[in-house]
Length: 335
Image 1 (tube, one colour):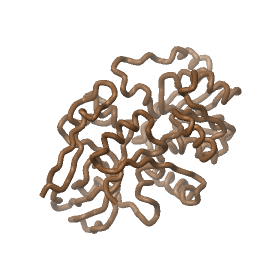
Image 2 (tube, one colour):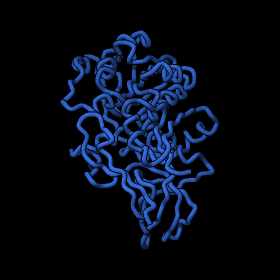
Image 3 (tube, rainbow, N blue to C red):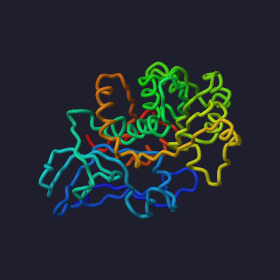
Image 4 (cartoon, rainbow, N blue to C red):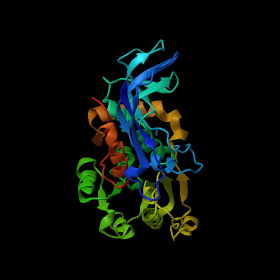
């Protein structure tokens, strides 16, 4: 019976991904073996880091292979189980997204509680993006109360939480950049940022100086490029930069130039540290224990952008890279 759908990598993108880089394939529902479960995926995540895995280059995660199903975070309902502690109807979090059904070995998933929090939050504010924000701010950027914090890509899943955590933990001032007037309004009115600007309205360095005339102490980088150069210019003595992503460069077909003011790293004794959430899984329980009650109480707010249907997953991913989302971008595969 043809009843499952998969999204496969059809070809490697040159520049911005297009629909031609994806193949939508209908196939039979797979059957689980001993020690495995069959999951019907309900919600899947699309993330900027997936763009890097579409390239055939060595990195911290293996590249997607042409002709094979892509992968990423997903939450699903167990349909069939050959594992003692998992039963049909349970919900699990795993990395076999980009398909309607997945067969998983016993150590390739974790059970999640749909009654404790909406399933989508395990892919966003309480999932990998949330832990990235938490660990990046507190460990990589070594945040201290009284710091002035600048976050680029601040309306995204990671950046929006970075700003709110900084405020809750005693930041002097939190500034965010985003790509539309509506997102800027959201940062200030809904999320409590002290200032925000639309990077499309003018040079980032000028707008950042207006928002932080006394400079910044921490920069959480999701964008790279002009934003990183502006942050280096604005950062104070012994400032810290956590580099989480460089989405402005992900679709570049030629090497991108470095910031032109790198010499300031010496004079200002700046610490710049790359951030991979894989290095911080030891904080997962601490993060959930601290942040989940804040989410449930409404002290931390989150936004999700949904695209419906597995066949529209490429649209969600392409839209993510162009800033079509506010908060976490998700694909609603099934109810």
